[in-house]
Image 1: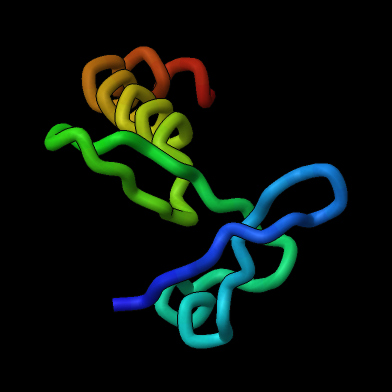
Image 2: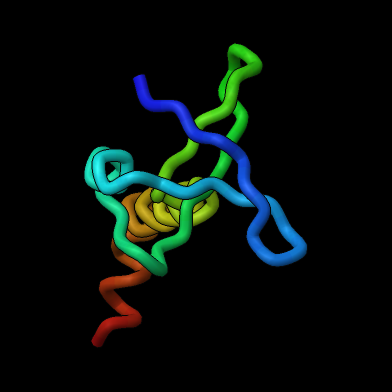
Length: 75
């Protein structure tokens, strides 16, 4: 388990990720991380945007349901 201290960065607070933590998260300097709430009341720090995932799921559903319409539009 990794632990982090909250530190002052300018007039804000932040976390400094170690190389090991960045490797586990598969992120690089400049990437964005998302803090999401889990169903059990905890939190998850992830590089994956949950809103983008929701939009892609909707797009896949629409593409599947309206396959013929999209095929005609592509002509």
